[in-house]
Image 1 (cartoon, rainbow, N blue to C red):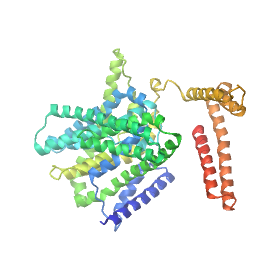
Image 2 (tube, rainbow, N blue to C red):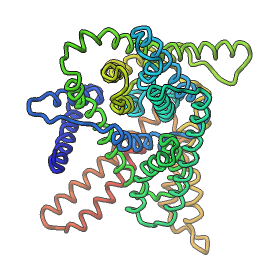
Image 3 (cartoon, rainbow, N blue to C red):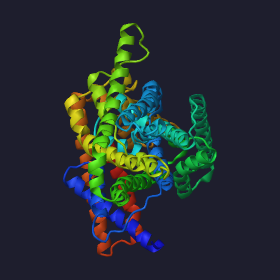
Image 4 (cartoon, one colour):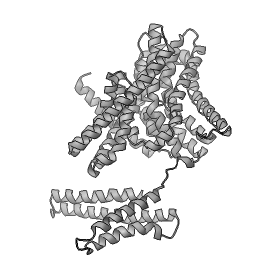
Length: 527
């Protein structure tokens, strides 16, 4: 395929993505499911070109920015509080699922070497950060569960990838040392943390000196790939390097970004992540044709692979249930014995966590990277695709229904020390104190009375309002609805003046920019 044809194919894919997203929104379907199904349908259209996916390119292109996006918005304090639970899922559940899949695969295919069975388990074991993000954006979970799932999605890829590489090496060389593997895993993680911290610290120091909005945004976008590539070049975990750098950047962005940089960077980043995330699911669907071309006769899949594939898929899903409910039962028993360092999830929350184990881009890329000499390579490819399709199309589409039925409760210990209303009051008081200091001239005379009245009213609104918190929120929403309507009316009048030649383009853009900022502020305050 010529380079120009490849570029045209990429543009066509993004046009398909926009159409599928619109269709999914109209039909109230999860976008991830619509993109996979739509991509698969497009792949089998007559005359559609075949898609050959380079697994290394998929990992380096898609994984760093999507991991960075999750780490950037991760709340550090809850993440640290839930670290034991996150590691239980990101490491313990990955190892347990790998072992469970290996045992089931060995029982189904006794002639397959144990190391090859472990390879398949490592491919299927880590739930995917992209799939988790796509689903979590559409559902509402208690803070503790959200923190656990987001933390798991950030860290489990490192465990899965390390397991996979050691298992593949064991198949190809015939040797394996548990002690050496454990030591190497620890070094990979610690090395990834060090590389990510260095990249994140460099970013903070660099942004304090750049002084140009566009350069700051460009430097921020490049952090994720810089951390991943540096980690891989130094033979440590690129995944951990990205997550560490993302946590540092997210922590410091509040003090190194100006308001204009934050608004512009966030808008650009959201579009970039949307396109990459959607492209991942579309590529999964498009790559189905390549799988069928490789296998040849579809009857071979049904006749010789259907039963073991379905049983292995079931083992992947059941293993997560066993691990989460098992560890939760152990925590509950320890709590009854007087150990209170951890709290059990409870059956409702454990059900939701167990069902939220979608696989995606990492499973796909790792499966496609299998060497040709790998025993049962075709079976592993088919199983990987089956696990992705079942977990995304079945678990991903039904997770919202499961959450509504289970109704997991918020853990009081997971709530922040200050709620939204109290934080808002503290913010308004600080603003009022600043205005009171600046509203008088050198002689002590009040020179900004209207500004002072405005901020005093905002600071005392919470104490003077008579009614419930819900009624106050409704009143605030109505207040900002009026502001939004006024902004829209002002914008319409500007456009009318411009269309009639009363103002030029520069005046239109300047005044419209002010209205846009006012509208964004009103929408954020209303929400």
